[in-house]
Image 1 (cartoon, rainbow, N blue to C red):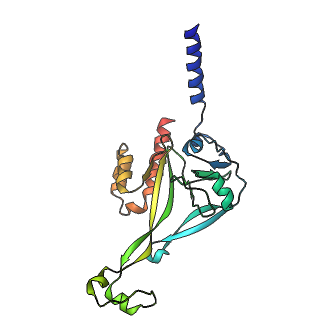
Image 2: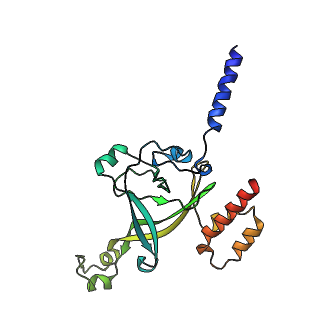
Image 3: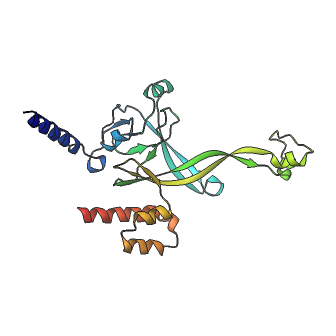
Amino acid sequence: MKKYHLFSILLFVQFTVNSQHLIINDTIYKEGIYKNFEEFKYNKPSIKFNYNVLKENSGYGISNNENQVSFYKILINKKEGKSIGAVFGFCDGKNVYINEGLPKLSPETEFYKIEYFGKFSFYQYVKKQKTKKLISRAERNIDNTRNIRISNNVRRMLEASTTVDEVSFVEKIINIHTGKTIILNTKTLQKLISDNKKLLDEFNKEPQQNKKLKQFLIKYLEDTEQITN
């Protein structure tokens, strides 16, 4: 009798695990906020989504205006966002937006739209960070509007610095099974598509590899899905 009960429990557990459909296999994405990766993975947001979404753009390249990438914000008041806490992303019923850093939700929290769903889902954004820039003697003498104190001490003048905003374009993929995120670049893509010799050879001959990462990734994933299906 005990063996029978144990067997029944194991069958139930196995059925429960197998019955959880991955979001990439669903045709409808459930509207709501994902508190963590697992909720996103199984298309089971735990918080209702009754908000508008604001779309903004970040520039990068020459003078940070050469190219534009969109990011998205939830129009939510600070108090309500604070009560929700850290989130992984959300779905507005049509598209899915994530931020794998699990930021605390606020009106300023940025999310990035998943542009391709598959075993590896693709998204992109502009990374912003503040860095220190050394200020040359010439710059300090020319521009006094920065309120930088001019010193007669040469060493101190050379070591003077200011904080500047630095931006960089980032392409990423997230493994739907593990939640691991990988920065997509020439090396990581070559490693990923290494089992498709024809496609790898084509990519290695591509003169603008950095601009074609997304294109080759999708081609690889589509080829893989056709083989497995």
